[in-house]
Length: 86
Image (cartoon, rainbow, N blue to C red; front, side):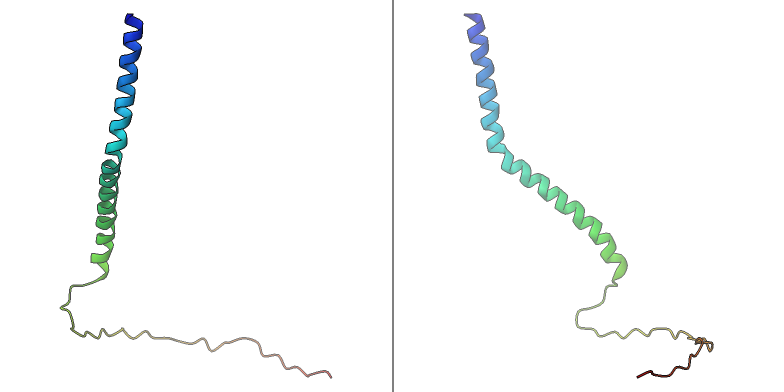
């Protein structure tokens, strides 16, 4: 009789936990997704703050690009004279 009672208790605990996990799974997954989203937001926020400067909305800013001295190589290559054959 004790063996049957022990098996029934184990089955009751097993099915009870199964139902409990089924009810709690959506909340757990939502929590995990929220934390992952916050982590990615924080990682992307670091890159975003490095690349942009805070400027008031609607302000127009023209940034000048520094002049680069471009020197062309006078030795372009060898010129080959050719004739067309018909």
